[in-house]
Image (cartoon, rainbow, N blue to C red; front, side):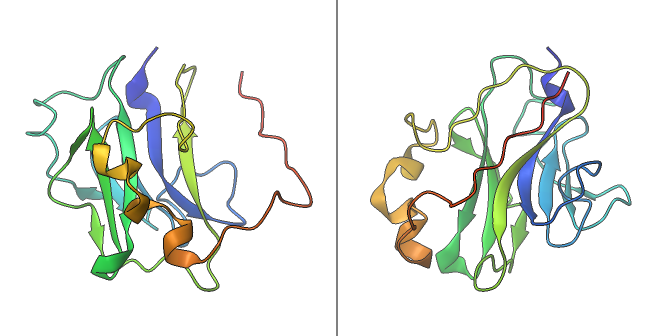
Length: 156
C-alpha cells in the first residue's frame, strides 16, 4: 500500500472522474504525496504547513487522515492525522451549503487499500463524535435515503 497516493477532501457534483479533489470548481483537498493543499486549482497547490506536524514524512500505512469542516467559523476546512487536528487550518472562508452539493471525496492514484469512516465507527479526532459536529445540526435534518442509489466506480 502507498497511502501517500490518496487525496482526501471535498468536491461538488458533477465532478470529473479523471480529476483529483482540489483540482476543479469548489473542490478542496490535501494531497498526501507532497502534503500540499489544493482549492479549485491544478497548478501545484499551496504549502499546507503540515510537514512539521507529520514529522517530515508523508503519511504511511496505519495512519488515519481526517477531513473536517467547521461551520461556525465562516467555513473552515481542516485535516487531522491520527486523531490530532493539523495546524494551521487548510482553508478559511469556504461556505459549503445552500445551493452547493458538497460531498466528501477521496482521490486515488494507483493501487491502494484504505478504510473510510463516515460516522459508523468512532472518529479518532474525538470532537467529531460530539453532537455539535454532526452535519444535520448545521444544515437541517438529513432526509431519508436517496431515491436513486449510485454505484461507486470500481478501481482496479
